[in-house]
Amino acid sequence: MVTIDHDAVVRARVLLLRSGRPSQAELVGAYRVLAEVSPQAYVPKLVDALLALRYESRDPKAHVALAAEASQAARRVEVGAPKRAERLRRALDAYQASLFALGRRAEGRAVCEELAEAGQSGPLASVLAEEGRFREAAELDEEAARNGFPEHSFWNMVRWAANLEGAGLHDAASTVFRELLEETRRKAAEQRTALAILTWELVHFSRMRESVGDGASAAAARREALSVLEELGNTGEPKNWSCILGWWRTLFVLSGRAAEPAASPESPMPPFGTDLGWSRDVRDGFLGMLPGLEAVAARLRETDRLPELIDVQRRIGIRAAVREGGHPYLFEERFTQYFDEGVTLARRLPDNPTRLARALTDRSMFLVAARSFEPAHADFAEAVALLAGPADGDDRASRL
Image (cartoon, rainbow, N blue to C red; front, side, top):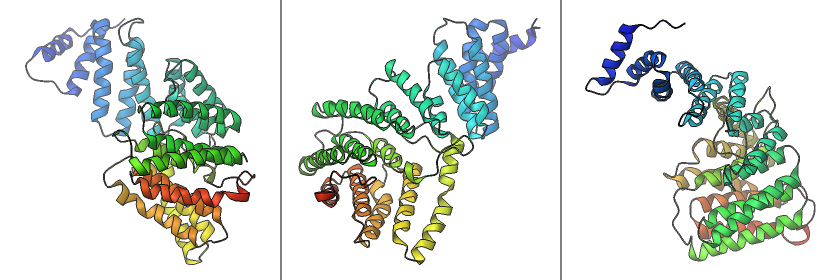
C-alpha cells in the first residue's frame, strides 16, 4: 500500500498552477508525486517530463537513470490509453541508447528485445548486426518489410540487403536491392526522388554483383549508372532536393565493410547498411581506430607500399564520412582531399586497374554528392572503361 504525502501533493499542484514556467526538474518532481495519486492523468506526463529532462542533461549516468524511470512509468500507463505504445517505444529507445553509450551491451540488448516486442525492431536489428548476427537481423528486417514499416524505404531495404549479404545470402540480398532499385527508378521517372540517389544505388548494386562474380549484371548496372550520370552532367537534377548526403554516406560506408574486422559479440562493429542507429560505444570504437590507421598509413607512405596504402587511406576516408559526411557546409572542400589522394595513388599503379577504377568510382560518387556532375561523369566513364573489354563479365571480384 502506497502512503500518500498530502503536503507533497498540495505543493505539486501549487507548482503546476502558479504563474511562470516550471523547470523540467520541477515538473518531474511534481509528476512523480501526482502519479501516485492520479496515475491515469499523470503517469503519461511523467514519462514525457523524464524524457525531456534526459534531453537537457549532459550526464550519461543520469541519462540511464531517467530513461529507466521513464520506461518503468511507460509500462504503468493503462493499456489502451492514448499514445501509450508511442510513449513506451520512445522511453525504451532512449533507455537502450543510454545503456549502449556506457558500453552496457547486455542490458541494452535486453531493452532492444522489449522494444522489438513493442513494435520497433530496428534497434535490435542494428545491435544483432553489430555483433555479426546477420541472419537474425535480416529476419527482423524481413518481418518489418512484410508489415509495411516502412514500405520500400531506402533505409529499411538497404539495411535488409546488407544483413542478408553479411549472412552470406547474396542472391537474396540482390533480390531485395533490385526491389529497391525498381522503386527508385519509378520515383526518378516521376521526379519524386533524385537522380543522384538512383546513381548511388546502381553503383552499389554493381559492387554487390561483382563481389559474387556476376560480372554481366555488374556491367549492366554500371552502364545504366553512366547513362544517368550523363543526364545529370547535361541537364542537372530536374528538381532541387534538400540534403541527400545520408544516402551517399550510407552506401559509401557499406562499401567498405569487407575491409574491416569481422563483427562478433566480443568485438562489435558498426551495423553497416544504416546511417542511423549505431550504438554509441560501437561508433566511438570505429572512429577511435583513426589514429592507428593514420599511423599505419604514415609507415606505408614512407616505404612506398602503394596497394596497402590505398586500402588504408580508403578506410580513413570512410571514417571521415561517418564523422561528418552528413554536413553540407563546405562539403566538397572538406572531403576532396580524401578522394583526390585515392585517385592520385592509384594512378601510380599502372598494372592495377581495379584499384584505380575503385578510386575513380569513389570520387565520382562523392562528386555527385557535391553536385559536381560533369567531373563525376568523367571519372565514372574512365572507371567503366577500365573495367570493360575482355575482363568485363569474368569472375574478378571486388573490382569496385
